[in-house]
Image 1: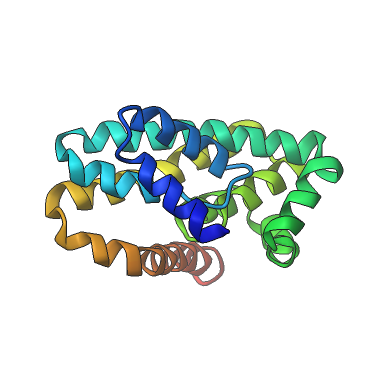
Image 2: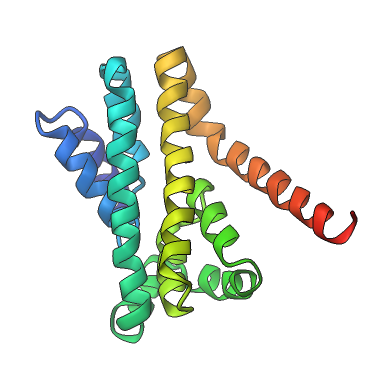
Length: 193
């Protein structure tokens, strides 16, 4: 089922209203949908590299707005919508594991989840459930999602098709390493220096 859904989303990248579909996908992926917008972002940028920055902008804005929906689900509808959705996608264990990390790191957790392969919808719902300051959530989300989408679009714009396989296979790992180094640097500054 997930593969068919993935193929359908990928096909939308060639649709004449692809930008609208990309915005919708970016919005719902941040709160309820399992397929990331990169599935459309990559072929759309490769098809028209001059629009790379506009495509990244659409992903970023729609993703942050969708994140606000996830925040609202966590804040107001967790038992009715949030918990059943997390169970449906099999994210309950990730959610519970991340809950403690979240309590310790707050905005940094939002940022890290926003750029890594960690399901962003989990963090948006948890942010609402934990009542993270909405402005802190928004700033961290804009920075994280913007970094992610603009980096992907920028790599595709600069390198074109040859970078596609690299992005699809290793970008999640690179983002994870980047975030570990970033957090590690702050830990060193706080506890060592």
